Length: 126
Image (cartoon, rainbow, N blue to C red; front, side):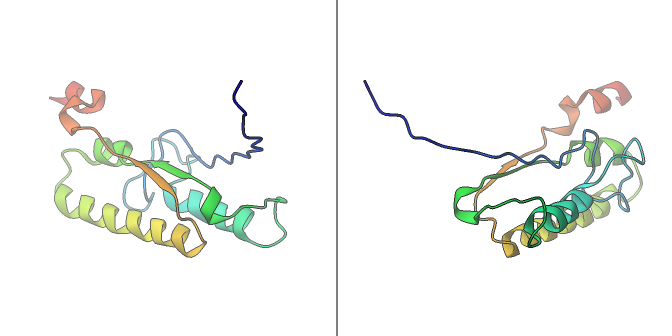
């Protein structure tokens, strides 16, 4: 019989359903929903900062998963200047990834946005 590695893992989730990259660019559906920018700030304040949450982690053995953008596309669809707005959203998105990288994050899984015309919110508008 094979041997199994003895892994002790800890998961942290800072995710909020309905979040956008930045509430100042695209408002979430509720004001209580924290944006990606807010979530990264929570992470750096609660996990990265020394002595907080008792978290011990290293960038080499941690995986950072981010799935964001669907709400940005859906909530801004049809707005004038949509292309410019999406460009600003992507700039903020990559700034947030840089913050994680500066905090020692090295392993990322980034889930993309499906084609916007298959999103239910867009299909309902069309």
